[in-house]
Length: 122
Image 1 (cartoon, rainbow, N blue to C red):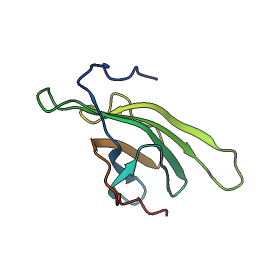
Image 2: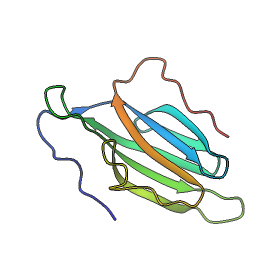
Image 3: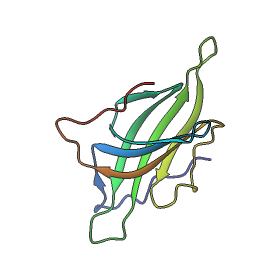
Image 4: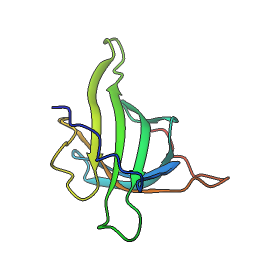
């Protein structure tokens, strides 16, 4: 299911980083990390790109939303799309990534820094 982008109001703030959380359901391992917008990140067999990260201004109810492309690369198999669309920090179940082993969701958006920590490849 593809959802439309969050309401595009003049007050929405575009941010350069997304704060994401990743869960390996097989090991119950959870990681939180920051990813720059338009940076490809790989964790195990999943690869993803955050295309946009929007945040409401402080005077409005809090909400962060990110547009992600997620695909899986398994050795000897064609690349398969896992998720493409908006994820909302306040309502992760509204547009959740469907995968048997991994969960990935948005926690927040923030301004990019000069030394952004990248998620290590596994």
